[in-house]
Amino acid sequence: MDILSPSILAADYAILGDQICQAKENGAKYLHIDVMDGAFVPSISIGFPVISSLRKSFDDIVFDVHLMIEEPIRYVERFAKSGADIITVHAEACSDIKQTLAAIRSQGVKAGISVKPGTPVEEIFPYLPMLDMVLVMTVEPGFGGQKLIPQTLDKVHALYTYLRSHSMSVDIEVDGGITVNTIKEAKKAGANVFVAGTAVFRGDIKTNMEALFEALK
Ligand code: DX5
Ligand code: ZN
Image (cartoon, rainbow, N blue to C red):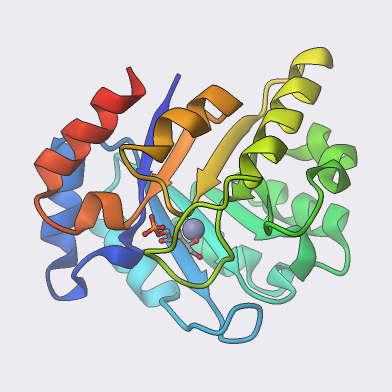
């Protein structure tokens, strides 16, 4: 099943709750929440207080939390307690990937791992049995509104082919530069969870989401 995961990084934070309501009313089942620490990536975004406040108002949407932070194992428990349903960490940010994924699972939340455009996707193959989702970054993490790097879709396809040939069921998420034009290519490559920030929250949310769902048909 195809899932659209609107990224609130592109939302208007002064009216965040209202914008999430609109995304939900127009079919969002997931909400992508980007956490940036100013070290793993240059930007700083949001953290625990925002996530736990949102959780109180939105209990029926999957919180898809993308941690762009160094050594995320330090914070896994707090993100889980704040309300994350899926915690995705970067392979490049963990000194012990196995231990980090085990920490996520021990909190009873789903585990995801992400790779930056320059990291070969084969590096995460050994961890697939511990994963619910792989997030293949289609731009360099850190900023919204960038253009999708076409070569990253080859990695999506390589992962898709590997999963199929091993009869494994793991979601493939793409994040960065997903628009009405690129979403089709990403789906063709094998992705089934599509993060979109700018393409959802810039302009009219309803019109934007209808166009994205239409492109996925
Ligand atoms: C970038 C973030 C993305 C970002 C995508 O590092 O991980 O989730 O919000 O933004 P768009 O959809 O505008 O490329
Ligand atoms: Zn993200």
